[in-house]
Length: 566
Image 1 (cartoon, rainbow, N blue to C red):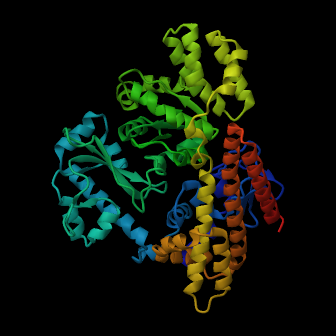
Image 2 (spheres, rainbow, N blue to C red):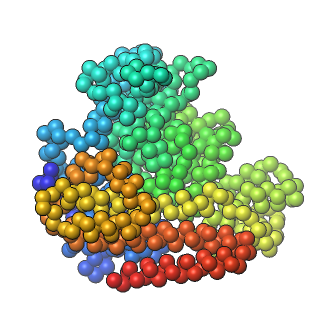
Image 3 (tube, helix red, strand yellow):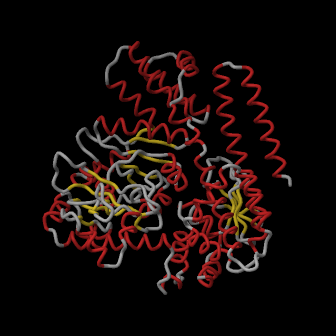
């Protein structure tokens, strides 16, 4: 595996790789662009071809080709390794020899499950007929690897047992369930359903979404895989692995609700489409899309449910500084219907998409409200979105536009804007600090990997006691729990670390940088959390608390500055 990593490094230069994801411009001996890991207007992200690494002066993101793909694509090390191996045309020798890590073994269980579902679809005429009636072609079914889960209770379980898969592995990936009150009695999670595989952004199967073929009063229309070590529903977007290239090329993404909507849009050539798969859209989902393009078009069903669904998603997108538009589908139609019946009408709907604020104002004007009622609706349902806009110029533009269209005076709108409440969804620390948490997790993982690797080395090449004490100092009470959590995937961490450093002493230099970065990121998170508390104290007009949190912010800021200059 070490030789494979070195081959990848020798065949892929970092400028070409990063340049395939974001726009870079020459800046002396380096290249620069807008950082894909935080929202910025002035480029502070630099790529060094000589050093083979990148660094952002805004958020301190840094690394090489492997860390870039991991962070940008939201992959683990193995996923990034496979993406880069495909780009470089390198065979991953260890996998060819059949050596598997634990996570890779679980991916293989899902791959065998998918093979079973595909085979069962080919043997089930009613399931195939349903798909063809919905407008899917044979090629589309094959391209998305759509399958069928038989109605029998244990067909998949018995198939996987026959392949030597232990029941514990089936449970861990969520394809079987244990019968209540039993130890060794199991049944299939998915039965009588059209099966859509859910992939990570490198194309590996991580879970499934099943649509019931014959509806009954007991079963939900759609059933998704449970949360597993491979599948985190708050991070995975259906179809992102197939849409990401076109999202970058077209510089916008289209978000739909269901699998069938996505599959049909891809079938008619609208391949920059992703789906939320019936789960709530999260900040993590939107951050992944924003890295590909800051522009997003929501194309939900043309009914009140779809209209409501866009509400929370819109708050999240605007709070992340995204350029958000909504495409209005005809009442009673969803994107899949239009793709099948009238591709031209679908394309026109997408072309006529409106900024979310214009979308809501138009909806209110169509209701024919009197001036007083219209003003109340604008205050309750439109101005909160204006308040979320990061730019004062943008806010001014929309205030002026709303005034002209509703005949409400600009001054009155500005006064109401001062009093309007920003939606809780948009101001939660979870949304604001998602990227900070992501980077912290990546650094923590690398440090614990080095720690475990050196503990297994004889003799270690660094002072293990000193390293462990420094990590404990930064993590505090979280150290023991994190140590226990990482111990559960020790084999994978050892593999990642050995593969990454390839027997060199680079990690000795990296440890110092990683410790400094981790402490800085923790301080930044602490600063951001304290700022939220400061804002609340100001709203409550509690001068004592305001003073306390101001002092805390100043102290944290001084610590961050000290770290940067050491």
